[in-house]
Image 1 (tube, rainbow, N blue to C red):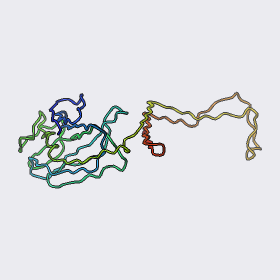
Image 2 (image 1 turned 135 degrees about the horizontal axis):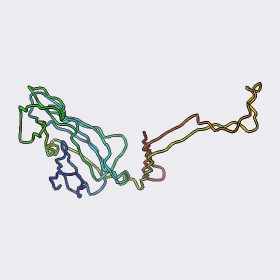
Image 3 (image 1 turned 180 degrees about the horizontal axis):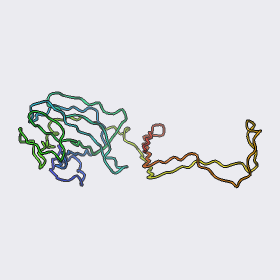
Image 4 (image 1 turned 30 degrees about the vertical axis):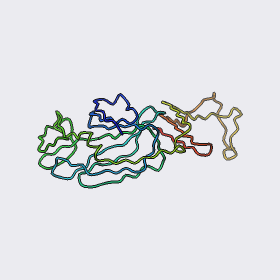
Length: 234
């Protein structure tokens, strides 16, 4: 059975069989399995909300990568008051011991109209329940413990799906300059044989510059014939 722990910070990762309910920003739940597990099915059930119109709350599921030493995106979904959803896991097999769900937005209800809030708005709240809190900006804050009751997650442990080796190559800044330079012999291609080069000192000209930032190459090796390579850059 999992142990539930209430925190106000995400600086500490959970222990095996531990669920952290973190009241930071709009709310986070984070849990840890004793071994790397792969998601097989994710069911999202309706969540009662203190508003007069059906709304949706954006959430994101992430997994902790020991190679990247941070949480990476897994999938996005919406919490709804009226509908049940079954999420389809990504095609790529991902096994991780630590997973979390992050609530990405708060709620506001004014005269029955629901929309996203901002720090500059001064609005009055009309509906309240015990699992909803109000902050200094008058936003509905959905308590993260609600996520525990509205989600059913099935996982499986497959040893063959756990990478035997992972490699990560990171380059913050790469610049490639492509240059041309005149031939010292002064000879031109046949198509330009009626022209002659002017005798000038050798000058190097840059005709193309490629600048790449934050290049990451991540490789997972499962066996000799089974591996994957992902590249990200901007």
